[in-house]
Image 1 (cartoon, one colour):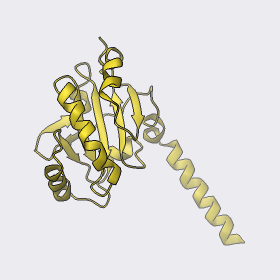
Image 2 (tube, rainbow, N blue to C red; image 1 turned 120 degrees about the vertical axis):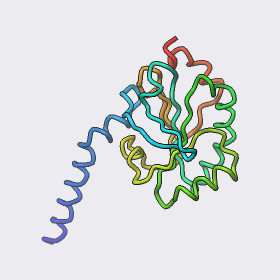
Image 3 (cartoon, helix red, strand yellow; image 1 turned 45 degrees about the horizontal axis):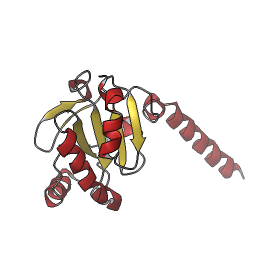
Image 4 (tube, one colour; image 1 turned 30 degrees about the vertical axis):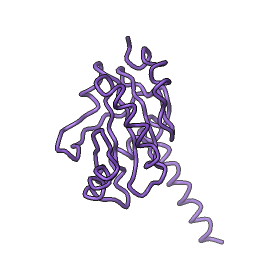
Length: 169
């Protein structure tokens, strides 16, 4: 009996700590400011959210090589990249769980991912966005506000429909 209470207390404290972290609360809701991050793509390019703010919307795709739904989304993300690539920053962020940078690079080449890929070593970016499953997709306006969060790639027509809100124009 005593052990069960201690275990329940431990779980309650753990849950309270997680819910109390600003990243988990802030990043999980549409309408909130997106957490800043900086990283290096698999091609060696430095990227940061602040590079794009005020210039173009940002589309983050959190994925993994072992995620079957992530594979299904690649053609749709490639279509977004073809249509908006010059006006929309697309970054695929491998969550780094049960994966490696080498595996992510090989997967990218095998599946013709036509957009930059970041390997989130230590899952720092993923944690700051409160990612708990893949795929998770986040669309951020030029103002740094999260406009979409979901598990499905937004259709090209939906992005076109909401372009003014995303771009601030």
